[in-house]
Image (cartoon, rainbow, N blue to C red; front, side, top):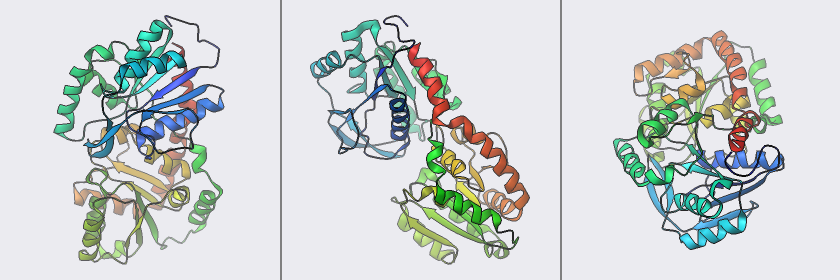
Length: 389
């Protein structure tokens, strides 16, 4: 570290995010999960974000106004230009040890926070950036290249970059020209091991009847990128005998809801497939009662927090679209990687798992071990080492 010694003392940490912390999206979960854990370790954690409605977080600083935008298949809020003087005054008053920016970031807010930190504290503040995304569309990739040009000088003010998966390491290098260290998204896995989840898992595992109904579930926004329509198509492609053995529940809301309702009806799946809407506190139980949790995103995923949540809760087996982000979580096992847009292949993979209970158990045991590497305590240890330089 070029400035003050941070090897032992508690740190004053600023998590910087251009969006608000009001929505439960992946970047917000990353920030809040790490922040909560560092707080329990005695560090002084602050959240620097754009306009927010939350009142339940300590040290939450709303420092920018925003406008709604769409990027990479997501709806989010982007900051409008923030006063440089305001940020300099704020950073001078706070004197953070670490400024941790969620990237790619806006030149109009997060970049100005970094500039202000360097102006006020010089080398006495350690500036970290974490890259979170992979472009889903050509437009998103082009926008990333434009943003990289706008941030070229600002990126030189960082001490260290992190990326949430190996594919995101490549994205940060190839588009933004910066090296980064792969550190997975943190998940508080213990929060998904509730008593309700354990009970649901026990009921599922003790029902040894080979002819029992196989529970298939999906959780995600009802948008193109997450693949719910592909799941419905794959279920429709199953043979009648296999369809008679399953129940499918899709949790989530979004603009594709009406389209999905019509697809379920026209495919004759109304007795099999149910849209249950948004779930929150009941997610661990929902996961744990599932024999097969399906996340059929075909592309645009930098990681896969939802996969880890399902594994942590004790789902029978978790399968996902064969995209780089999900592969970084699930590994290279072809039994758990699917081709969502190839309906015949997707249906065949589902049928194989529906009929082979022994394979599901083998995969379950592998995933129960695999999920431990993503626990927030382990991830936070690595991040803290990078904070201290």
